[in-house]
Length: 157
Image (cartoon, rainbow, N blue to C red; front, side):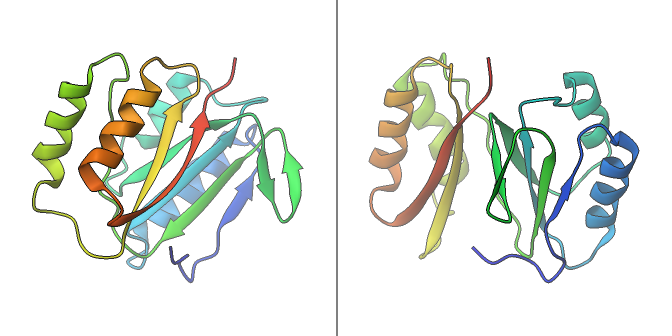
């Protein structure tokens, strides 16, 4: 995974205006094709604030809420880490309450002929979600060893 020449940025969650401004700067940059958006659980933004942030963003964004983030070798319980990427992510949302057949059908619709050699999957699964094991097995059964897997359980109580 290559990180863009525009460096990643760690922001305090409480400064919503600054978070929105930096996200817009990434959106306007021609070199930013996708954005990783990782938020620590303490003092996290409300769902309505997050919806407001991404409402006008056309750049693919992938992320989640985590109990802690590691930034510059320090653990952070609050804040947002935004990482600009210089390639376009193909993003897909799965409902973990569905069954294996639904997972496989959804994978076929998007990725049937769309996997390149040396691809990576970044998977954030709801830590409290059901059917995580069948979901992960579906991913492996579909992609096999042809991709690299990166992932984490996301969410907080």
